[in-house]
Amino acid sequence: MISTTAQEATITTAQETTSQQPDSQPAGPAGKVVLVTGASSGIGEAIARRLADEGCHVVLAARRSERIAAIADEIRSRGRSAQGRQLDVTDRVDVQAAVDAVADEHGRLDVLVNNAGVMPLSRLDALLTEQWDRMIDVNVRGLLHGIAAALPHFQAQGSGHFVTIASIGAHQVSPTAAVYCATKYAAWAITEGLRLESGPGVRVTTVTPGVVESELASTITDPGAQEAMRTYRAEAIHADAIARAVSFALAQPADVDVNELVVRPVRQR
Ligand code: NDP
Image (cartoon, rainbow, N blue to C red; front, side):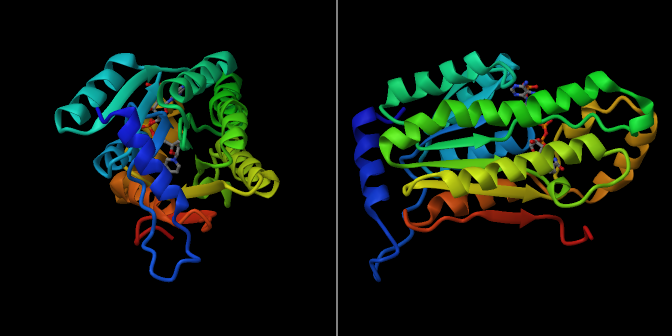
């Protein structure tokens, strides 16, 4: 693990770089303290791995603590800086405690990646109402819990970066995806509101993936939606494509706010 002192020195240098300086290079994500929700698989895992490789200290959070611990161990075994934290984003108190713990331990939290999400698709007339609730709880309330926990820290620091992993489903609706898309439209709207309301120094990025390799479809129980997904997901791209987009947003100088990146397979129309 890198020492807190070394980390703080790097963070200060990074944040003082702005695009006003003609010769300045992008600040780069190195040295930032980053909390990634839903980091036990798929996109969150890829983001955590990439940012750790680029010199961030990464806190991986999700419910499956053994997977989180194994990924964090593997990252550390390569000389990078990472730790795991069991977290259920539907529990507001748990999210607050996780964010506060990172800020206490490292003196700051630079980036919160609100990535955790579920997608148990089905037609509305299947009436899988518990699954509707689950999507709202994780994809919307989980996001809000992250914002509520981190915003006071970012305001006190005068800096911070929120990254929301939304979806193409934030811009278009398809059959079986009404509730999922509703949660992603909500995630987009909440994140845009956050951008408009946040004071100077706080950056806000929505990353909008198309179809990406992950475990996301594994929560689908409806047979019709499962079948449709098999065809739809055949052209999925690797989750590192989304991690590269997050890295790009983080790497910009402090006065540059990358607000939305849409990343999908070339073949996806
Ligand atoms: P995965 O299923 O691989 O990852 C989802 C992650 O969310 C897991 O780490 C899971 O961890 C975590 N998670 C689920 N529920 C909770 C919870 N209550 N508390 C904490 N963590 C939770 O799918 P993806 O990587 O694809 O999904 C990541 C994000 O990307 C989601 O928001 C998804 O909507 C979005 N997205 C994905 C696309 C794709 O094609 N893959 C396309 C567009 C958007 P655990 O079960 O251990 O808690």
